[in-house]
Image (tube, rainbow, N blue to C red):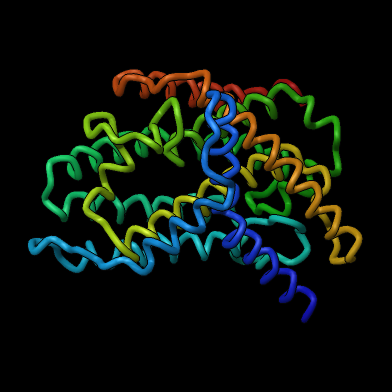
Length: 314
């Protein structure tokens, strides 16, 4: 029991404290690919520290929603860090480790951010909120269908069972339905985390912003909490992509050797996914807003094909 509690806390710390450095690695890799030196991989930590000590400036016409949203955003991500199996499937909270619950926890954070963007009363905040909700309305059904495709093969929507099922059958990774579900989930992950080609996390052009437009009125510690929450969300989505679809190395016991292999495997998988994300964002430009539904519709069709393939390619 103590070992399970210890490894659960350790995994939670890996997510919460490791998320900023993952974002720093992606930024550094993009800078190198673009021929720039770029900031160090630990720059997000210094940015968060700077924001935490800055004064908070709040518009007079905002309500309690605006002040509550940063705490909801970071709180939902801290809860999600307990749900996702990061290093092992033997220490998770079984009653929480459900991927459908996880997706709705993510959606709760998005919902409050959209409310906060509207609450400030700025034109850009309202624009960003409406765009975010439009994307969420298209992305959520795709997430559910992609999850259903994996759950059919695992016989459960529990994250532990899904990972253990994939790990026990290496040939499952060659199944066309499995690969289709991965592609669909990857596209949705780009939309949910505000990455290119759906959104540009480093943009300063107001007319092209989505996520950044919603948090334009935030400053100080409120902005730090929201930024930290976005780092954690990116870390969790990449971890889900790595551990569900490529579960090699994930420990199924609490043996120190197995957990050490899990740490090494997590670093490798996150490194590969971060490199792929950096290459993708360097090679692709941001899509026009009316093209985003086409991308997400294609993702939905991939997820639907993954479900259909289960009944024909067992």
